[in-house]
Image (cartoon, rainbow, N blue to C red):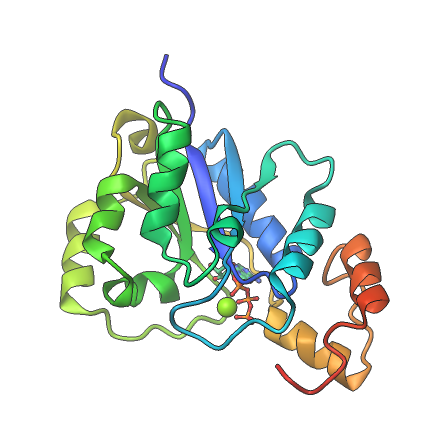
Length: 217
Ligand code: ATP
Ligand code: MG
């Protein structure tokens, strides 16, 4: 029997919150994944610098994932440093686990701008994509190249992830948790109480490090 596929969930995780963790867990269960590797990026190609340092974002994820066997901290982008490109990450992970099918997990918003990603056409050659519809998402128009990919590769049958090596796009919906790191950073800056939106051990770390105290979001 072929081994179960592996999920890859990239993000800034600035900070990690329960929206990320539920996303990983629900996707794991719906798509029948072996585990999900959570990949904090080092330097984003498309947005401003994260507020917390790479080491702090790694530590927050480590604390959040402690004791959860099916969610694994993958720090290859932090170790590579510089601008983080998903295609490099997929190839690096694939080299470590050549007999696994990789499934890149992303929101519909991210999929719609896939054409702006570095070497984007190589991505569905290296992995499957699991597209998750995120709460309160406003749909933009999909770029024709991405729309064509979606049209030819979209499926709702998770068995494909195991049958094929790469190239499928599995669409799933998960219950909405309207939490974002942006809102959390705003809450910290304005002194609101962010309890129950993120793991308590992450919250303690943020207070201990005096993170997110300024208005910078
Ligand atoms: P920011 O507000 O700084 O953009 P974020 O909360 O969107 O942070 P990211 O690190 O950018 O977090 O997200 C990583 C991944 O998790 C992305 O694919 C994003 O779509 C997804 N994600 C984040 N929050 C949620 C949520 N509440 N529900 C479902 N998916 C989420
Ligand atoms: Mg985001």
